[in-house]
Image 1 (cartoon, rainbow, N blue to C red):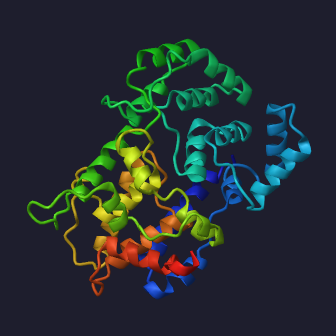
Image 2 (cartoon, rainbow, N blue to C red; image 1 turned 90 degrees about the horizontal axis):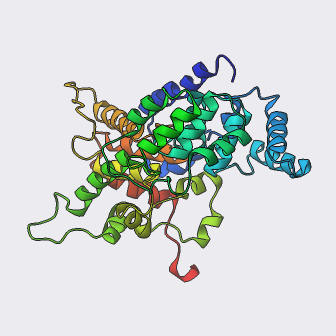
Image 3 (cartoon, one colour; image 1 turned 180 degrees about the vertical axis):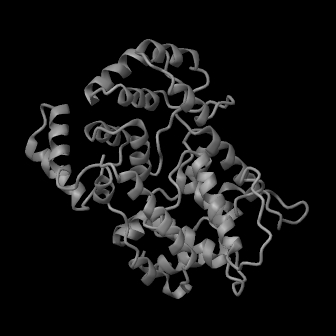
Length: 375
């Protein structure tokens, strides 16, 4: 990773915040404004962690070395697809492999994974904890896979979610002290009942947001709680494009739609059968304005600045994302741009609608309802 990459990684965040402060787009102009957003490509991300002129050869050499039976021509074609924006790796295991090929430290891998998949290292996941250990030890990717087989057995593997009071910061601090494979194996055994492949803090916050939507303050006395279906239809864009129609969308709209939570997804998250993801948390934050006490003691500033509400939402959103282990707001991510637009528009004193209404309006603009006769 180039020596100045850490500094260069900070610049987009600062620029994004300044851009967000000056964001002033009417609902009618949302489509044109979104089209002008310079979305970050996978090539851009790779360029922060490896010299651009070397990255193609480095990736091809590394992948061929890790998979001797693979055709170099096929591997080269896949890498070229990543670099020209045709596609990009999305599987967590593939992204981890690239961390080893690029020779990243655990800290750099955390940043790379967050930018490429919107989630940094999940330290409570024994597999990711072990891979981070392998990076610190200077292991190759094949060596890390052998290490996983030695320290994690089927009998020792944790369940999907653990509701014990142990969170990522605690595990991360403890994992940093592990110096040998023996210490790693012992730690995994001793913490087996506390680790899990799902996000504890995100789940707790998810349930807090969901409880506000299930029984909104606007509901009259005696009114039944909102069902998951009603929540999705009311707050989360129940009139979004059908599955087949998504193929007709441009790249940015497809990225906005990718992984958008529906009734089944929200239900599975609630029952712990599916991990809570970043997009769902951001949407729930938006439609609840962060819920109650979601900022962990944040106190609003006493000021008359018309942008104070927006700054509050922006800061608290980032605090929530960071505490849950997700990548913070990035205006070069089309979905994030939409979220920030809704927060900024709702803070306009001339606008009567709140963030939830702004979301509905922007979705209607970007994804106009199809003619029923043509569906």
